[in-house]
Length: 77
Image (cartoon, rainbow, N blue to C red; front, side, top):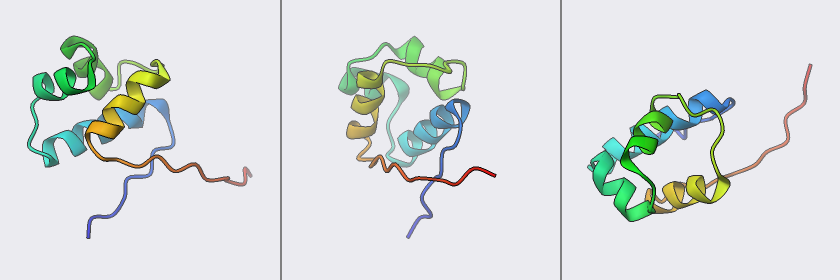
């Protein structure tokens, strides 16, 4: 069983999506088409260049990759 990725920053979400896309055997073009986002946007998102993104676009990516989104309270120091 693969260890789930824990994403704590906007910059880390894109690379986590990239890793999941590659594990699924999808190209950026295939995922972009399925999730109805631009391939250039997806490339920049995966590279961590997009530190903000429309939530609906992110949810479409996660849905296509069958990645759950879990929100967990964390105590700050």
